Length: 86
Image (cartoon, rainbow, N blue to C red; front, side, top):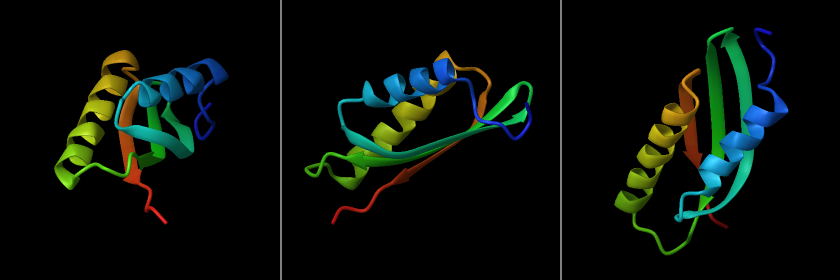
């Protein structure tokens, strides 16, 4: 289990939680890994809506992290990267 990705059901739940944030345009990349049986690493590259200010993006990142932690307690390490717009 250690080093493996989360189950498909947990992966889908993470996707749903991220996409529930109204500031999100889409998920570019989402990687997960079990660090221990009770700890999961989540790394998400997220595309935010283009009209957002930096402070709004920072707030959205905090909200996403808090939402994931409240719904998936084993998510002990969450890294959200803002995908650069082209």
